Amino acid sequence: MTTNLSAELLDNLLTATGQTTSRREEVRVWSMSGVERVTFPDGSTAIFKYAKKPFDSEDQALRLARTLGVPVPQLHTSAVLDGWLGMLMEDLGPSARDADDLDGVAAAVVVHSTRTASALPVLDQERLRTLPVRALEHLERLRKADRWQDADDVEKALDRIAQAAEARSAGATLAPFGWVHSEFHPTSLHVGERGWRLLDFARAFTGPGLLDLASWHGTIEPPHLLRLRVFLEQYVVAGGTPDALASRGGLTAESWALGWHRMWAVEWFMEQSVRWINDPATDLGYIKVVRRHLTDVLHLLEI
Image (cartoon, rainbow, N blue to C red; front, top):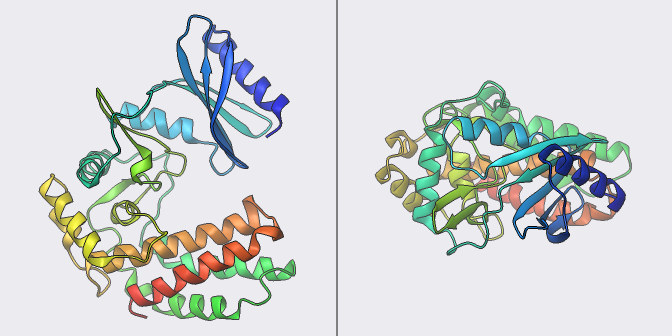
């Protein structure tokens, strides 16, 4: 995003709230979104967050979540300019501490028990089943652009997963099925002096809540079945549905959750590579991550 565009977007937001700003400070910025802290002349602060597609409907998700009782930061106002969403939000300040697993299950119970909202996209069994097919379509587009030429192993793995997907996706709509935060990590949970707030709702959807629980420990380390099983059990103890522990698709809940979460991530990475980022210079990095995740998918979904 250009400096001029971000300044104009912020100016529109400030006009809408009747504020003027004295200082901007970057918190975290990357090619598709950014977070800044703005300080007003009276010393008060707010968070200025901006993003382009596919992260440009977070304001709607935040308003929905707040209306339905999910603890989220207050959204002061939002605006769109040249395809970029800008939001002025409550500044929660520094965390009192890092979120731990018990914070995670408590937040997941609240999110998953929230009434579903028709405005959110849906990932049901049919949509889950087509993830490997959609990934193959992304691969075809990449190859037509003379990219990902040495990725025959990726194609073979996706073909195998596509053939097994119907059987393995069974149980997708078993509870918990509803709000899925989809960026559910300890860094998305702000634990302050006055309780917790859930951040980063840009990719929320309606779908299997187990995908949130599988994402909590991240995807950098190899998937850890026992750790997720313990996390699922803590979730049930904290008030989550006992069905979270039920087997589905012929697999244990933890294998199903980790396998489909990795497949969901693969399709997202490949779409990002061909559509949102669309930069051949990033291909090697993306291919490496996709290969690693596909190895995990084949193992976890027992294909």
